[in-house]
Amino acid sequence: MQSAACGQLVPAVAVEERDLLVPLRGTPDGDAIHTALEKVSSTLGPKAKALLDDIEQCISAGTLQAKDSSRAVETLRLLQQALHERRTVEAEYHSFGRDSASRRRLDPVHLWHQQGGIYLAAYCHTRRQVLTFALERFRQVRITYDTFQSPPEFNLDRYLEGSFGLFRGEPIRLALRFSRQVTRYVAERQWHPSQSLAPLLTGELEMTLRVPLTPEVRRWILGYGKDVEVLEPKSLREDIRREWLAALRGAEGRVEELRLTARKAVPGAGLRGERPSPD
Image 1: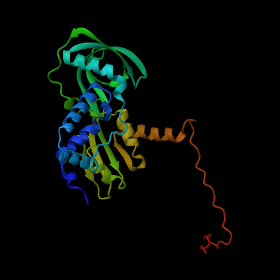
Image 2 (image 1 turned 90 degrees about the vertical axis):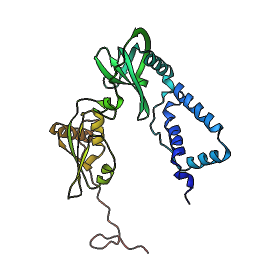
Image 3 (image 1 turned 45 degrees about the vertical axis):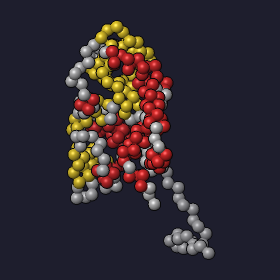
Image 4 (image 1 turned 135 degrees about the horizontal axis):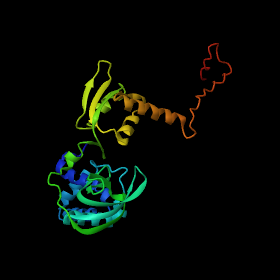
């Protein structure tokens, strides 16, 4: 029988919040919140503690593939200080896309946690726009004496509207057709605020959305394999086709032939090659 505690949603939220803090473990924020939760727990009576223990057996929040932020504690502390004091920082940052490090002057605007990692939105003096930086890719951070005015119009939700996940860019119209095998899975999730779904009489599902054509979008589409077809734009359709051909060629750059091994004849089999019945 399911425990009545599973229906206690308010305490359950606290349990899930603690699980979701796993990526912050070892950081000042994570330690402070953990200490606060422990203090709250210590003030509870026996019945309340028993209730929380019961909830933990029913509800939890997964943190699979969360980044380890404990190695960037000092970086996080400096960025938080600069954000609080509105001070420009000089940083050495390693770009994942270019696989190289560069020196930058940044005005920190907002820190947030997403997809198991901690990210910084900051105005880059070189690119002259607000960009996203991953905490673990900072090599050095130094707070300067220069101050800045944080843009009052900045809003994280609006900032991420032109993104799919963490990657941002100029959104374009994307049209996809999903097979019957994955229609239900696709339809029960909101992949992007702009998505529009149209079920077809064949059982397939067409989706349109406005997103930037970033590596994250391409990986998402490729993950469905034969169960998705790119309808628009044609350039992306061709890109996906080339990706699959490259995967078939493999590391040696050639398409391997599919070899079928003939089944050996079974002694005593009939004219049609049926296997003999078991004893």
